[in-house]
Image 1 (cartoon, rainbow, N blue to C red):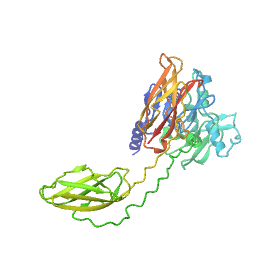
Image 2: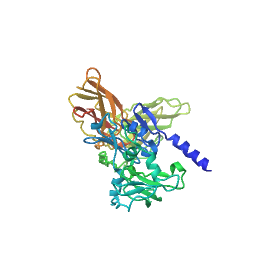
Image 3: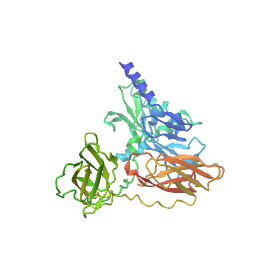
Image 4: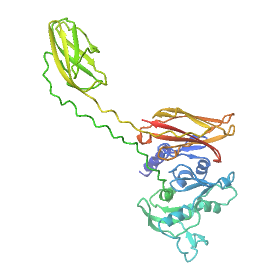
Length: 440
């Protein structure tokens, strides 16, 4: 049974392994919607991958002097000032931060070193194994960052930091009560029923500390107040004679059908008497202007959409016979209109064509004035002010122009309105913002 469980877990893990969407991007199939890009992608792979960091739970975001991305167990920080050094990507002090969120402080120092344990004089705590073959000490010693020039101890220190507490039984965020020890950048948890390689697990501190940015509420589509529809068809009129109408309550601009049975093979003549008494001949739009061999006929006519409401009489003659039927015409309410807003003026060095279109429309953008052959970041701002996390990059051509075709295909009707697409240099010193409008 143990082999079956481990095999099943192995197959599950393989199905969720990251796939390289590009040379510098890691995506994780259905495990998470977020991907890792460099420098975070390389760092994640080289320093422990899934067991150490977990899956990404946010997109990378840009701060004033660095960028960051959250994973299930950590916060990865990229510092441009340290570019091309082993310290370009660093880990946040997430263990210390989580303790503070729980209104806890690092514990007072223990009485002294314990035989067989690691002693950290800086904080006054020991890190010990829970069994002779496994435990927190061995895990701390055997895991560390791949930083050239550092010894084994220093690499572990870079990954986990110093211990902040002694080991003790605690209930984690999943409701499991396990032996727990806190470090500056991690929380060690002892799960004695797991296989040896999984007895020590790192707590999901990233998920516990990460506070998703609360996006502004979508700007609701203005709800128009429809014009009240007039009460339909309240008139009383004579019963039909010989002929009949399919409907006696007809909207202006729609068709009406009259049928009956006269003498066989007779030419039919029909006209309409309007509410004011005037007589008009209506065109037969569907049907035959002659009765059939059995004398039956069916004619379909139409009145213009601007015909005045009221009671109309339809007279049909064929040979020596004739008949009259009546219907009431009403004016349907006009469909409401929706105002999606006026498209603001785009930057002088940009355009969108077209500037208005329905969901699914392909928009072509132009932006120019950039340094030739440079790489420009592109992102979209929705009507509610939320910035798309799916940023992409385009290469400027030899004339300093950047262009991109984008199709908006979504069933989320909250997303109609004014959009902005921004082309921005990597140093954020020059950007072109272009506006367009999405309609239903």
